[in-house]
Image 1 (cartoon, rainbow, N blue to C red):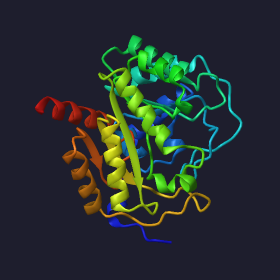
Image 2 (image 1 turned 120 degrees about the vertical axis):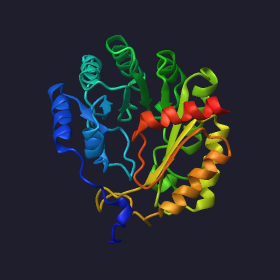
Image 3 (image 1 turned 120 degrees about the horizontal axis):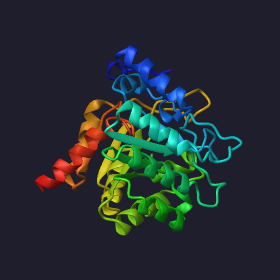
Length: 290
């Protein structure tokens, strides 16, 4: 086993605030991707009174080899869940709320209607909260994607996750070009919505391959990009090849900015939703400066 480097060791944060957020989430019977994906930043995020809510259950219809969320029997969509998410957002006093879901290929609308209900519920109860959604590819069902676009979240995120060469091993049920099409479609349909995507490093990709993906994302109209280190959840998951140094993350982040991606977070502990509010504001500031 490769020894974890110093730059990936997470310092403990305010456990009192962490427990407070955890209790609010549990009291509303909600799921967070922070816990389901065993995110290394969850203590830090919870202590800052933030979390990424995961709707549509905790069983996925796909089995990506990097992901700690399990494939299993899907639950029926809980139509009361959006209101519970909105109440938790209000109780936490969130200025920026992130909503994601498992992939629901089994649902006729890919789960889009529950995203819409959740967006609307948050807007109704906390109209100053910025709403960001992290969606699956929805099988590139444009009718489903349109539903989410028409609800007008401030940010729509869809992660490409890795370089195309590794898709067959890491994301066998996904398609790189389809993910780019989703992002391109969103930006074309509503240019005012901020589009966002993310990559993991340490899966065996080369720097040139990552740069090529970053260029593809720019061409697809992506405004914000996150790049972080892949951490293998268990021995049964896709094997991590290497810990990538902070210097490489800095180089890739600088490249993304140099080709015009406005909001970039590139560091070992970066995750899709980590400091999402800061990245959104960075993107807005950069866009205004240009």
